[in-house]
Image (cartoon, rainbow, N blue to C red; front, top):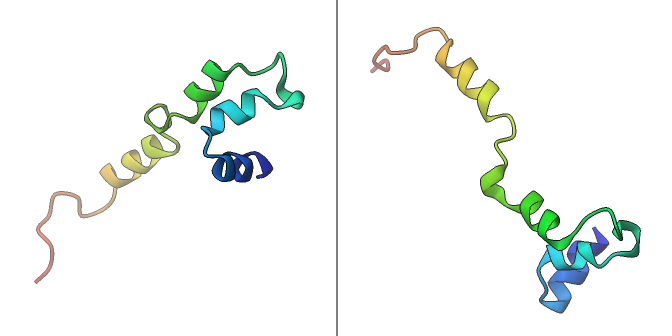
Length: 65
């Protein structure tokens, strides 16, 4: 996105650039942007992937030689 490019070129954190965009004024603070961009808070589809793996046929068997 344009914000990512600007952050990269200017050497600024993406959260700072996003918080400074007029389109996001009053909608997203820098702190909120930082929290949303923190990969530690994003699990995505990990839950369904783990559930699928745990119920997969052959779970717990030794791999074939």
